[in-house]
Amino acid sequence: MPVIDKLKSTIMAATVLITGVTGFIGSRVALEVLQAGYRARLSIRHPEQAEKLRRIFSSHLSKIEFTVVSDITVTGCFDEALQDVQYVIHVASPLPDRNSDLLIPAMQGTTSILQSASKYSTIRKVVVTSSISSFIPLAGQPHGTVITEDTGIPYDAKQGISPLLDPMVQYRASKVASYQAIIDFVQEHKPSFDVTTFHPSWVYGRNPAQEPHDNLSGSCGALVLTLLSPERPINGQFLGVHVDDVAAAHVKALGECTRGFQSFLLSAPRRSWEEVNAFVRHEYPSVAWRLIPEDWMNYAVDSSKAEKELGLKFKSMEDQVRDTVDQQLEFGKLPVQSVL
Image (cartoon, rainbow, N blue to C red; front, top):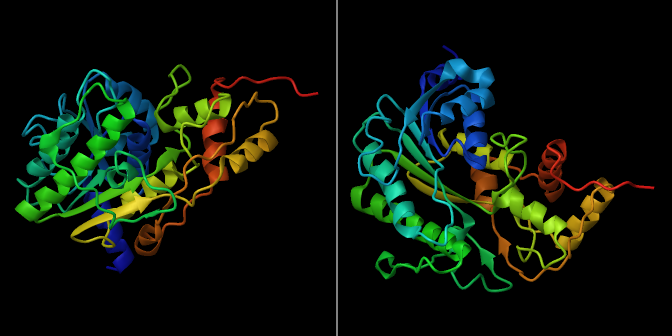
């Protein structure tokens, strides 16, 4: 059998458990997995979520199945879901909330799936979607610095963090803590499967999970709010990555290009808000943009490891913004004004 046919048949026989599939990144990753020929077992919290996912993945219904895991922080919650699975992509993560502590759910959600995976000799690889926040100090990244996969952020989970703090600070702390939990697990248990973590910057692009009646949220929501608000940008500089690139990275990681424990930053080169402002005003003159093009951060992300080892070529700021804006225009969520 030719090598290419052997590889294709191996992919067709493999099943990937994917969490977080009702969200932006998770739904796009699942679509990429299905398009690559894998079967997908989609983990959902509530049975009724399956209906929407069947609409999203209507072209791949013969290759999807569902498993209900109502609480991902419970030890052993993935035991049944991982039966007859070869790969795991863990995208699910708790969202910021002023009234709850994110650290414990984030850490337990990650370690619980690793613990369950350790019970099966069939598991070849676990891929975890984290964030660039895993490498950024809670006080913020110093100006003029470059973030790499070797940038270490010491964190002691015992110190905790107050739920009264800003939700985004909680979110960043949860990413630091959950990443450290992965490192600790790998060092202590030395699992037979490979572990890969991805750390994207702000993720933009078309959201497969968004429907016209859905409220805009997450990174795309933050971008649109920034473009429409006469206030200083939420982000101090435009530092983003297209969701298509994030999804492609996850599927590439299922192959032989990553072995052992590996981490990858995912980000296109930084751009200025002045460049973003010029682009949207030129491309979409009918939209009432109110962006204040002020850069108040200055640090870079070195994504060369992902480019070299995964063969990624990151889409530009223009692609990221265009695909985000086009979808929201189609859904009627942007203020359009007449142009003389």
